[in-house]
Amino acid sequence: MDIEKLARKDVQRLTPYLSARKLGGQGEIWLNANESPFDNLYSVCGAGLNRYSECQPASLILAYAHYAHVQKEKVLTSRGADESIDLLIRTFCEPGHDHILFCPPTYGMYEVSANVAGVACKKVPLTQQWQLDLPNIEKNLQDVKLVFICNPNNPTGNRIKEEDIKTLLEMTHDKALVVIDEAYIDFCPEASFSACLPHYPNLVILRTLSKAFALAGLRCGFTLADPKIIALMLNIIAPYPVPSPVIDIACQALSKEGIFRMKEQVNLINTQRNLLESALSKLPGFKVFNGSANFILFKCPRPEALFSTLWDNGIILRKSSIEGCIRISVGLYDECEKTLQLMCDKGISPSNLLRSHP
Ligand SMILES: *Cc1c(COP(=O)(O)O)cnc(C)c1O
Image (cartoon, rainbow, N blue to C red; front, side, top):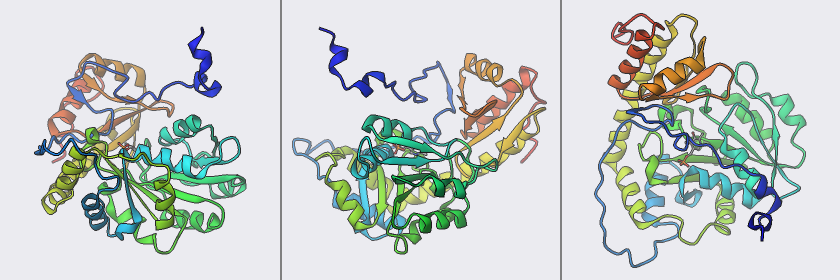
């Protein structure tokens, strides 16, 4: 029997999400997945694992509510922000009828999760300045239940104008939820929409410990929204979404000391990003898009050649879906310096770019 034919027709046609990790590479310097370079150590209590974990552990929910300055009734935790994207689509979109809307170039998982759920996508590209095209979004809202906005946006790194997001929230107030993906918001917390939750019942915010909190391998994320939205998502979430050791480590990361350390590391990364941006922008033919997150998008003359030269030397960057562009995550000082040095050795730039900008 042909086992493949047993699967759902649309699943037979799907291709798995090509994550940075799956692309492989023999790297020493990993600057391709927007991970934190800081490997913070945690202690895990190995006892009590004979028992199932709490679905929404009170200690973790309270710790994140405290960090995000929202009421605990507005917080849901899940297996990373990615699981939240999937939960939202399955909670709100009728397969074969409803749509999600997003604005490319942006994060790839909105489309992947919609495809898996059999939900169609409307794509309204960002403007040339990588801002929302509000007139075109408004024209395309028919049968749209969820509008995903990534702020700061991945892979472009820029912020979306606050006024435009507010206009969008008003435009959709009786029609659709606006999901603001704030995966990188800890690098620019002043741009968060969390304080707007009381004013917009259709606002949903996604958060994660994977980026600024340096816990990509932990798989822990959060949804901030009206309690009615949280309750609906809890109707479909798995019974034990968060493993006990994850709860344990996440609570340490969200302790007073944990948050203090995260903020120090965010300051270091932001400083390092600004240095790297100015160094890259000095290279002949390079165009750097200044960003607000822990990565930089840049356009360069021969992106393929640059990417593979660095790859062959154990420095792994990410090719962007945007024509001629490469995305680099901000690493430690030495990692950035080595990367620039290698570009220089290969004739791309004058040397010691980072050091000339103290
Ligand atoms: C990394 C990332 C996520 C995924 O977060 P996880 O919590 O690791 O699942 C979500 N959205 C954006 C924009 C990201 O870059």
